[in-house]
Image 1 (tube, rainbow, N blue to C red):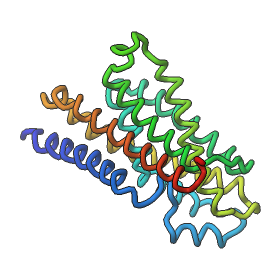
Image 2: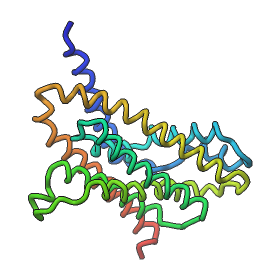
Image 3: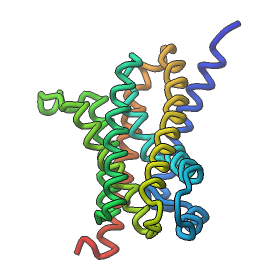
Length: 241
């Protein structure tokens, strides 16, 4: 039996993932890190510790968070060893977790538009890094581990700004935030596993080397679209005045 059908399915899945993320960013029908209206009502009405619901909400956010998925896609694009993947994903998770918990618990106010624009910038950065642009343009290679951690901090603040708008009950807040963060990490593992399986199959084809450049240009375009949308929202809202 040939493995070609499986590889074809994997390539198709990756193409649809990237195209879908581009479409979501281009349409810009909602802010990144938004919380579904049904979930908003539930979160605002409850108080006390609710571990399972918040784990579910965290996982749902990550699996449907196209900006997260775009960044993770860029991070693992040229990572082949499992220990390297684990290191970079752990750095991203550390940054994301820290600012999510600290931002909400201590009610640190940051403009959601600017944070989400920086998240778009993280996607642009990773695509340029994958294309070797920094070496060609400036003759230097940024510390990719430090960049992954730093951008992880901004990704966490992105969600924190949205959660703060919901005015969660202080009763059980810390436990619920920890549960939400656990859900985020579980969702990240689930999404990352699917991406890695598809990437592994795609890399086994001759088309990978031919299409790697195009894929990262598309990734960079998605990041620029997200940045432009958020910065436009920032100016239109009057925050940039």
